[in-house]
Image (cartoon, rainbow, N blue to C red; front, side, top):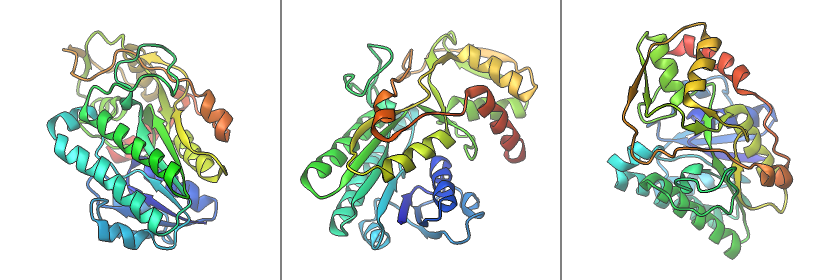
Length: 307
C-alpha cells in the first residue's frame, strides 16, 4: 500500500508515518512545516517528503498521484487560534480539505481518513457523547472542521471512495511540542520543565478525555484497512479527569511539584468532555491501550530531551 499523509511532519501525522513504515507500507508526506518538524521524519529515510500546502491545488494534485489511501491531517488547529485568525482557519481546514477530496476523486483514491475534532460539538449536553450528539461548535475551528467533515461524507456518498472522519478528543504524546494555542499537556510540561507556574483557566474542575497519540495512530490505520467502513467516529480514551487531577498526575510522572495559578475562563472552552467510543470499536476494532499515567511518563521522558 502507498499512503499519503498530509501534515505528516506534525505531531499526530509523524506517529502515523511511523506506524505505516513499521507495517511495511510506502509513505509520502505533504507538509508546509508551519507546525510540523522535518526532524520528526528523520528516522524514516525511505519516506518521500514534499514541502507544500494543502491550499496549493496543483501541489496537492501532484502528490496524490499513485497513492492508495490518504490520511488527511494538515490543518489549522485550535479554538483560540481560530478566533484570532478565522479566515486562515477556514482556508486551510475547508478549502484545503476540498483540494484533497478533488485530487482523490480525480486519481481514484478509494480511502480517505480525515482527522476531525471533538470541537465540532461545542458545549456538550449529554455525557458520554456519541457521534449523533448535536453539532453546535463554539469557535471557527469547530465550524471549519464540521464543514470539512460534511464535505468528506458528501464525497463518500457521491463518488467511489470511503471517507472516515475521526473526531479526536484531547490527544497527547511523543512529538507534541509546546504551542501556546495547543493542548494543555505540552503547555504544562513546557512550563514545568522551565520552572514556570502552571496557569489553570477557571477552577480546574473542568474535565477532559485524554487519548495517547499511539492509540490515535492505530485508530487511523485500522480505519484505513477496514473495508466498507465510512462515516464519523469518536477517538478518545472513554475516560475523563479534571485539570486539577491532571496536574497531580503530571507531578507524579515528572517527579516535579509545580506552582499553580488560576486565570479567568477562556472563550470557547467546554466545561466537560467524555467520549463514547463504542462505534469505533464496532466499526474497525478500536480499543485504546495506553493509560494516562503510563503515557505521561513516556511523554516526560521524551520532552526532557526536546523542551
